[in-house]
Length: 178
Image (tube, rainbow, N blue to C red; front, side):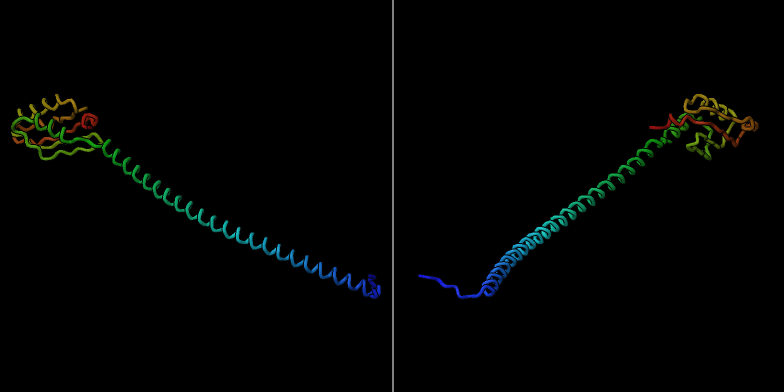
C-alpha cells in the first residue's frame, strides 16, 4: 500500500506548527499545575511554621512572665528579710537596762523619768528622800558596767531631803543587744 500525502507544504507547516503549539500548551499546563502544587505546599508549610512560631512565642512569653513574677517575688521577700534582719540587728533589749536600774536602786529613790535612745545617752530624773539615798544611788550606778560615762552634777547634793536629781550617762549599747 502506498501512502500519498496530498497536503501542500504550507499546510504541512501549519499542521506541524499547530501540533507544536498544542504540545507547548500541554507542557505549559503541566508546568502551571506543577508550580501551583509547589506554591500550595509552600503556603501550607508557611502557615504551619507561622503557627508553630506563634505557639513558641506564646509559651516563651508565658515562661518569661512566670519567671519575672517569681523573680520579683523573690526580690520582695529578700528585701523584707533584709529589713527584718536589720530590725533584729538594731534591736536593743531595754529590759536589761531597766532590770539593772531596778536592782541597783536603793530605798528612798523615785524615778520620774528615764529617757534613753540609740544615741547612747540616758537621762534619769527623779526624787531622792534623803542625801544618803542619793549617794547610795550614785555609788550603785558607778558599779553598773553597762554605763560608759557617768555625769552626776554637784547640784544634786545641795539639799538634804526631797532632792530633785538629774543624772546623765552614756550606755554601752552593745551590752543591751541580743
